[in-house]
Every structure is written in C-alpha cells, then in structure tokens.
Image 1: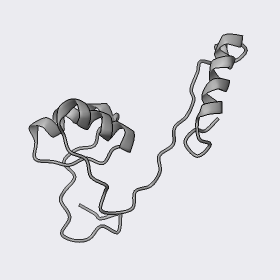
Image 2: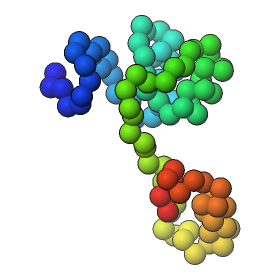
Image 3: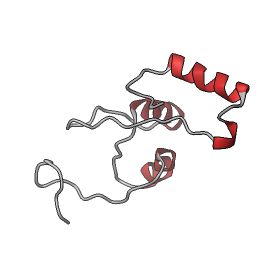
Length: 97
C-alpha cells in the first residue's frame, strides 16, 4: 500500500471505504475497527448503538456539504424558499451554494 499522507508508521491498514457514513454502523458492530466520520453522525450513532466516540489522533480535513436539486425546480418558489432557509441556517463553511 502506498502511503499518501503523513500518518506515522506503523499505521493500521484501511479495511474498507464506503460511500456513505451511515453504512459504517454495521461494520463497527461486527469488526475490530475504527472509522472516521463527521462528529454529528458519530454522536448520533454512539447514542443509538452504544459505540464510543473519540477525537481523531491526527488533523482531519473538512468535508463539503452541498445543496443539490433538480434543475427543473430552480424556479419553483417552494423549492427556492427551502434552499434559502437552509442557506440562512447553515454555516457558510459547511454549505456550498
């Protein structure tokens, strides 16, 4: 495995990568493993499953959260209102318009 980050050696191997962090619950309940997922998700999963959370031992990059909608709805007043509400409450660093 080619190391592409500044992780110290020896570092545990990556067991898997998933496309959505909600799928990590089953893996963590059945394997001796750890996962790095957003803090809000980790807290919710820990509360409902008995898993334990801890800050990562290395700096983690931020992840991008985006609003996505069908182009046919761009002029829909209800859809536009909802997008505006989300933009109003979301932190600018957490949401790309």
